[in-house]
Picture 1: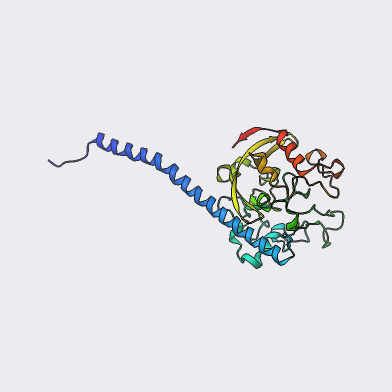
Picture 2 (picture 1 turned 135 degrees about the vertical axis):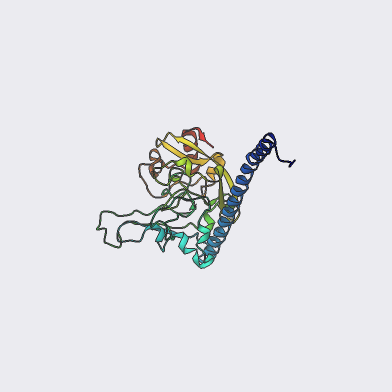
Amino acid sequence: MKKAFTLIELLVVIAIIAILAAILFPVFAQAKESAKRTSCLSNIKQLNNAWIMYAGDYDDNWVSTGKQYGTAIAADGGNAHDFFFLSQAYVKNYDIFYCPDRHDTEAGSSNDPGGRLFGYGMNYGPYHNRAGFGTFHMSTSYDTSISSTDPRYGNHWFQGRNFSEFVSPADVESLIDTGDDPQYTNAPYDQCNGAGDCLSQVRHNFQYQVGFTDGHASHWKMAWYQDNIQGDTDLEPVDPKNMVKSCYDPSAILSGSYSGGQFGGLEDASTSPTCQQVVTTATTERGAPIKQ
Protein backbone atom coordinates (compact mmCIF):
# COMPACT_ATOMS: atom_id res chain seq x y z
CA MET A 1 0.00 0.00 0.00
CA LYS A 2 1.13 3.54 -0.78
CA LYS A 3 1.66 5.74 2.24
CA ALA A 4 -0.01 9.18 2.31
CA PHE A 5 -0.78 11.98 4.75
CA THR A 6 -3.98 11.58 6.66
CA LEU A 7 -6.47 14.43 6.81
CA ILE A 8 -5.61 15.07 10.44
CA GLU A 9 -1.91 15.34 9.62
CA LEU A 10 -2.62 17.85 6.85
CA LEU A 11 -4.78 19.91 9.18
CA VAL A 12 -2.03 19.89 11.83
CA VAL A 13 0.54 21.11 9.29
CA ILE A 14 -1.82 23.86 8.08
CA ALA A 15 -2.47 24.91 11.67
CA ILE A 16 1.26 25.08 12.42
CA ILE A 17 1.87 27.20 9.30
CA ALA A 18 -0.99 29.53 10.27
CA ILE A 19 0.40 29.95 13.78
CA LEU A 20 3.89 30.68 12.48
CA ALA A 21 2.49 33.21 10.01
CA ALA A 22 0.52 34.93 12.77
CA ILE A 23 3.70 35.19 14.83
CA LEU A 24 6.11 36.20 12.06
CA PHE A 25 4.05 38.61 9.92
CA PRO A 26 3.82 41.29 12.66
CA VAL A 27 7.57 40.89 13.24
CA PHE A 28 8.23 41.44 9.52
CA ALA A 29 5.91 44.48 9.54
CA GLN A 30 7.74 45.94 12.53
CA ALA A 31 11.09 45.34 10.86
CA LYS A 32 9.85 47.10 7.71
CA GLU A 33 8.55 50.04 9.73
CA SER A 34 11.83 50.23 11.63
CA ALA A 35 13.70 50.43 8.33
CA LYS A 36 11.47 53.31 7.20
CA ARG A 37 12.11 55.17 10.45
CA THR A 38 15.84 54.67 10.01
CA SER A 39 15.59 56.02 6.47
CA CYS A 40 13.74 59.09 7.75
CA LEU A 41 16.30 59.65 10.48
CA SER A 42 19.08 59.52 7.87
CA ASN A 43 17.22 61.99 5.63
CA ILE A 44 16.77 64.42 8.50
CA LYS A 45 20.43 64.25 9.48
CA GLN A 46 21.49 64.96 5.88
CA LEU A 47 19.10 67.90 5.61
CA ASN A 48 20.36 69.21 8.96
CA ASN A 49 23.91 69.14 7.65
CA ALA A 50 22.87 70.91 4.45
CA TRP A 51 21.26 73.79 6.33
CA ILE A 52 24.20 74.06 8.72
CA MET A 53 26.53 74.33 5.71
CA TYR A 54 24.16 76.91 4.22
CA ALA A 55 24.40 78.95 7.43
CA GLY A 56 28.19 78.72 7.29
CA ASP A 57 28.11 80.37 3.88
CA TYR A 58 25.63 83.08 4.92
CA ASP A 59 27.06 84.66 8.08
CA ASP A 60 25.61 81.97 10.37
CA ASN A 61 22.05 82.76 9.30
CA TRP A 62 19.64 79.83 9.18
CA VAL A 63 18.08 79.30 5.78
CA SER A 64 15.15 81.63 5.03
CA THR A 65 12.05 80.60 3.17
CA GLY A 66 9.47 82.30 1.01
CA LYS A 67 5.88 81.41 0.24
CA GLN A 68 3.89 82.63 -2.70
CA TYR A 69 0.18 82.25 -3.25
CA GLY A 70 -1.88 83.08 -6.28
CA THR A 71 -2.50 82.00 -9.86
CA ALA A 72 0.39 84.01 -11.23
CA ILE A 73 2.93 82.36 -8.94
CA ALA A 74 4.31 78.83 -8.92
CA ALA A 75 2.77 76.51 -6.36
CA ASP A 76 4.49 76.45 -2.97
CA GLY A 77 6.16 73.14 -3.67
CA GLY A 78 7.74 74.63 -6.78
CA ASN A 79 8.89 77.83 -5.10
CA ALA A 80 12.57 78.44 -5.77
CA HIS A 81 12.76 80.54 -2.57
CA ASP A 82 11.68 77.65 -0.33
CA PHE A 83 14.16 76.10 2.10
CA PHE A 84 13.93 72.72 0.37
CA PHE A 85 15.19 74.22 -2.86
CA LEU A 86 17.80 76.48 -1.27
CA SER A 87 19.46 73.35 0.11
CA GLN A 88 20.06 71.87 -3.34
CA ALA A 89 23.54 73.39 -3.61
CA TYR A 90 24.50 71.17 -0.67
CA VAL A 91 22.50 67.96 -1.16
CA LYS A 92 21.83 67.80 -4.94
CA ASN A 93 19.12 65.26 -4.22
CA TYR A 94 15.36 65.64 -3.94
CA ASP A 95 14.77 62.07 -2.77
CA ILE A 96 15.82 62.85 0.81
CA PHE A 97 12.84 65.21 1.13
CA TYR A 98 10.40 62.30 0.97
CA CYS A 99 9.38 60.06 3.84
CA PRO A 100 8.78 56.42 2.77
CA ASP A 101 5.77 56.36 5.11
CA ARG A 102 3.99 59.36 3.58
CA HIS A 103 1.69 58.30 0.76
CA ASP A 104 -0.75 61.19 0.28
CA THR A 105 -0.33 63.26 -2.89
CA GLU A 106 -1.38 66.68 -4.11
CA ALA A 107 -0.65 68.20 -7.49
CA GLY A 108 1.67 71.21 -7.46
CA SER A 109 2.75 70.90 -3.85
CA SER A 110 6.17 69.36 -4.29
CA ASN A 111 8.86 68.84 -6.89
CA ASP A 112 7.46 65.41 -7.77
CA PRO A 113 5.46 65.29 -11.04
CA GLY A 114 3.04 62.84 -9.44
CA GLY A 115 2.32 65.20 -6.55
CA ARG A 116 4.10 63.16 -3.90
CA LEU A 117 4.42 65.34 -0.82
CA PHE A 118 7.59 66.11 1.09
CA GLY A 119 7.86 64.31 4.41
CA TYR A 120 9.49 66.88 6.67
CA GLY A 121 8.57 70.27 8.05
CA MET A 122 10.79 73.02 9.38
CA ASN A 123 10.46 74.46 12.87
CA TYR A 124 8.19 77.49 12.65
CA GLY A 125 7.60 77.50 16.41
CA PRO A 126 5.71 75.40 18.97
CA TYR A 127 2.19 76.38 17.95
CA HIS A 128 1.39 79.05 15.39
CA ASN A 129 3.46 78.83 12.21
CA ARG A 130 3.69 82.59 11.66
CA ALA A 131 4.47 83.72 15.20
CA GLY A 132 8.26 83.71 14.85
CA PHE A 133 9.26 81.47 17.76
CA GLY A 134 11.10 78.81 15.73
CA THR A 135 14.07 78.92 13.37
CA PHE A 136 12.41 81.76 11.40
CA HIS A 137 11.51 85.32 12.32
CA MET A 138 7.87 86.35 12.29
CA SER A 139 6.30 86.11 8.87
CA THR A 140 5.97 89.23 6.79
CA SER A 141 2.41 90.11 5.80
CA TYR A 142 1.09 89.04 2.47
CA ASP A 143 -1.23 91.08 0.29
CA THR A 144 -4.12 89.39 -1.46
CA SER A 145 -5.99 92.62 -2.15
CA ILE A 146 -4.01 93.33 -5.31
CA SER A 147 -4.60 91.62 -8.63
CA SER A 148 -3.79 87.91 -8.64
CA THR A 149 -1.80 88.51 -11.84
CA ASP A 150 0.54 90.90 -10.03
CA PRO A 151 3.87 89.17 -9.19
CA ARG A 152 3.63 90.62 -5.66
CA TYR A 153 0.31 88.88 -5.01
CA GLY A 154 0.33 86.67 -1.93
CA ASN A 155 4.06 86.80 -1.17
CA HIS A 156 5.23 86.41 2.40
CA TRP A 157 8.64 85.57 3.74
CA PHE A 158 10.23 83.95 6.77
CA GLN A 159 13.75 85.20 7.45
CA GLY A 160 16.02 82.63 9.06
CA ARG A 161 17.41 83.41 12.48
CA ASN A 162 21.10 83.79 13.22
CA PHE A 163 22.74 80.90 15.06
CA SER A 164 23.65 83.29 17.87
CA GLU A 165 19.91 83.56 18.64
CA PHE A 166 19.58 79.85 19.42
CA VAL A 167 20.01 79.63 23.18
CA SER A 168 21.05 75.97 22.99
CA PRO A 169 21.37 74.61 19.41
CA ALA A 170 21.25 71.03 20.71
CA ASP A 171 17.80 71.79 22.16
CA VAL A 172 16.32 73.70 19.21
CA GLU A 173 14.25 71.64 16.76
CA SER A 174 15.17 72.15 13.11
CA LEU A 175 12.73 69.86 11.29
CA ILE A 176 10.39 66.97 11.97
CA ASP A 177 8.14 64.46 10.22
CA THR A 178 5.09 66.38 9.05
CA GLY A 179 1.70 65.79 7.48
CA ASP A 180 1.50 69.44 6.43
CA ASP A 181 1.59 70.87 2.93
CA PRO A 182 2.31 73.01 1.02
CA GLN A 183 4.12 75.14 3.60
CA TYR A 184 5.56 72.06 5.35
CA THR A 185 5.52 73.33 8.92
CA ASN A 186 5.66 71.61 12.29
CA ALA A 187 2.43 73.30 13.43
CA PRO A 188 0.37 70.81 15.51
CA TYR A 189 -2.91 71.75 13.80
CA ASP A 190 -1.42 71.26 10.30
CA GLN A 191 -0.30 67.66 10.76
CA CYS A 192 -3.22 66.36 8.72
CA ASN A 193 -3.28 66.91 4.96
CA GLY A 194 -6.80 67.95 4.01
CA ALA A 195 -10.06 66.92 5.63
CA GLY A 196 -9.51 63.17 5.52
CA ASP A 197 -8.90 60.75 8.34
CA CYS A 198 -6.02 62.36 10.21
CA LEU A 199 -5.16 59.27 12.20
CA SER A 200 -4.59 57.32 9.00
CA GLN A 201 -1.86 59.82 8.13
CA VAL A 202 0.08 59.38 11.37
CA ARG A 203 3.46 57.81 10.64
CA HIS A 204 6.00 55.59 12.37
CA ASN A 205 3.55 54.46 15.07
CA PHE A 206 3.62 57.96 16.57
CA GLN A 207 7.43 57.91 16.83
CA TYR A 208 8.32 61.04 14.82
CA GLN A 209 11.87 61.69 13.67
CA VAL A 210 13.21 65.11 14.61
CA GLY A 211 16.39 67.04 13.87
CA PHE A 212 18.13 69.77 15.84
CA THR A 213 20.09 72.85 14.81
CA ASP A 214 23.38 71.41 16.09
CA GLY A 215 23.08 68.59 13.51
CA HIS A 216 21.98 65.61 15.61
CA ALA A 217 18.69 63.76 15.17
CA SER A 218 16.42 61.76 17.46
CA HIS A 219 12.73 60.86 17.76
CA TRP A 220 9.79 62.06 19.82
CA LYS A 221 6.72 60.21 21.01
CA MET A 222 3.68 62.00 19.60
CA ALA A 223 -0.04 61.80 20.38
CA TRP A 224 -3.35 63.12 19.07
CA TYR A 225 -5.02 65.55 21.45
CA GLN A 226 -8.27 67.45 21.52
CA ASP A 227 -7.25 71.10 21.19
CA ASN A 228 -9.58 73.09 23.43
CA ILE A 229 -8.21 76.37 22.09
CA GLN A 230 -9.18 75.87 18.46
CA GLY A 231 -11.72 73.10 18.89
CA ASP A 232 -9.94 70.60 16.65
CA THR A 233 -7.40 67.81 17.10
CA ASP A 234 -3.64 68.36 17.09
CA LEU A 235 -0.60 66.11 16.86
CA GLU A 236 1.87 67.21 19.53
CA PRO A 237 4.87 65.81 21.44
CA VAL A 238 3.70 63.87 24.48
CA ASP A 239 6.44 65.41 26.62
CA PRO A 240 5.87 69.18 27.01
CA LYS A 241 9.64 69.59 27.40
CA ASN A 242 10.00 68.49 23.78
CA MET A 243 7.42 71.04 22.67
CA VAL A 244 9.57 73.76 24.29
CA LYS A 245 12.39 72.66 21.98
CA SER A 246 10.45 74.33 19.16
CA CYS A 247 11.40 77.65 20.83
CA TYR A 248 14.64 79.21 19.64
CA ASP A 249 14.66 80.76 23.11
CA PRO A 250 12.03 79.73 25.72
CA SER A 251 12.09 83.23 27.22
CA ALA A 252 11.72 84.99 23.85
CA ILE A 253 8.88 87.47 23.51
CA LEU A 254 7.20 88.24 20.21
CA SER A 255 8.73 91.19 18.39
CA GLY A 256 6.37 93.04 16.09
CA SER A 257 2.69 92.31 15.93
CA TYR A 258 0.59 89.44 14.74
CA SER A 259 -3.11 89.02 15.37
CA GLY A 260 -4.16 86.19 13.14
CA GLY A 261 -6.97 85.06 15.41
CA GLN A 262 -5.15 81.85 16.32
CA PHE A 263 -4.30 80.65 19.81
CA GLY A 264 -6.80 82.91 21.54
CA GLY A 265 -4.88 86.01 20.49
CA LEU A 266 -1.72 84.93 22.30
CA GLU A 267 0.41 85.66 19.24
CA ASP A 268 -0.53 89.33 19.42
CA ALA A 269 2.49 91.22 20.74
CA SER A 270 0.22 93.25 23.03
CA THR A 271 -0.12 90.20 25.28
CA SER A 272 3.68 89.68 25.26
CA PRO A 273 3.71 85.94 25.87
CA THR A 274 7.03 84.16 26.05
CA CYS A 275 7.53 81.03 23.98
CA GLN A 276 7.50 79.00 27.20
CA GLN A 277 4.13 80.55 28.14
CA VAL A 278 2.71 79.64 24.74
CA VAL A 279 3.78 76.02 25.26
CA THR A 280 2.39 75.98 28.81
CA THR A 281 -0.97 77.29 27.60
CA ALA A 282 -1.08 74.84 24.68
CA THR A 283 -0.30 71.79 26.83
CA THR A 284 -2.61 72.91 29.65
CA GLU A 285 -5.54 73.42 27.30
CA ARG A 286 -5.24 70.10 25.48
CA GLY A 287 -7.31 67.12 26.53
CA ALA A 288 -6.18 63.59 27.29
CA PRO A 289 -4.52 61.77 24.37
CA ILE A 290 -7.06 60.48 21.86
CA LYS A 291 -4.50 58.04 20.52
CA GLN A 292 -0.75 57.57 20.84
